[in-house]
Image (cartoon, rainbow over all chains, first blue to last red):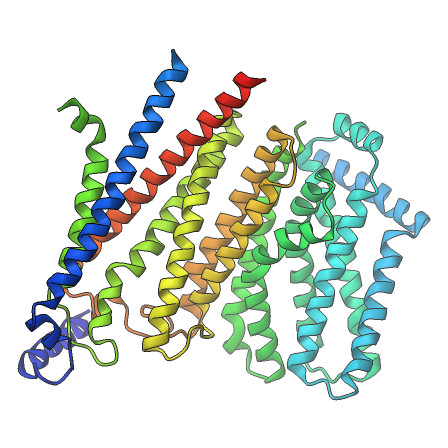
Length: 68
Length: 220
Length: 225
């Protein structure tokens, strides 16, 4: 257990020191492009959930009409 | 407890007597195993390495198991089933079928192993192979009692039994392949004992599950 | 507000999924070799599997309930949960495959967890074939419930116990450091656990919708007879 904590702390320290070592998508994010991706995804999710809620309501209506 | 065993042993004795009188299922499966093994021996053209041989051996054993159980359950006609339904409790029926199939499958595997030894396969630690055949027979019989009963009731073809049983057999087959690999690499016991333990556990779980679930299949 | 009272869990689901995508893409992640940014897949691929196991577990419970009470509604519920669970399993396998192609170099490798996933798909495909193989409803319901129980136990053994015994490339098995050590630092946990919850609730919501559609279908069939 202590071993794990120790090695994790080492990893944190190392990563704090060597920011430039592992290539991440900084340029992509710096250009603000990540927000475009996020906006697209949000639109897709929004449409998906709207469809899901409408389906829910349609089924509920059918159940009501069948009960009466 | 002794009452239960008495019922099961009577049923088993009756079934074995029937089998040897009719000579139907057992001998046809035996012939199936022997001919298939012989065909594989020829196709392999004496260059069967251990991986290929053990794969073929277990595959033939499993499909012989499918054959035996399917033939057995589909040859039971409706009248006999009804008669048994009124007399025997499902627990007894499940146990006696499982023991019956285990014995049959073990015999089939044993004879097949003898035949391969005769044809010239070199095997060390034959007693471990026998234990493996026994484990395979037990797991197969537990699983097949359920699935071939279902398949016979649904008048399913051979495909249904294989589709239902093979994926569920996969954990057991994984253990089996690891153990056989250790065997022909001649690894010491400690290398593969955890797989043996796992196999044994799987046998117990399969048989317990089959025993618990069978009564639900049985109700009409 | 009464609407919110009955639907609160669906709104929670929407919130969680949006949060997963937003935080998943914008938050900082540990910088690791080979994986780089694709570690973010952890927020999407793994919750699919957790949700699948959760849904199949619900199907398992409802199968047991059906066998002990013979109420056909439980059987229809089990069927709906299995259908959505199977669908999520397919998504899990395809996302895992794509992720593997770019990090491990191949679409499919020889790994126990992947085998477990494939076997799970095969098992539940067999379940659906069994379901469609006859017209006798009560017989099929009984058989499918028994098979579901048998299959689920074996499936759980296969995906949770076996990988621990053997060597594997997946994190957490066969000597590789598990989640808790190498990548799931607290930042990632903040997004990971809500993601699991969000996808699980989404799966339950979809299953409940499918269940209600099946019930409606059954009622229409009975009425038209």
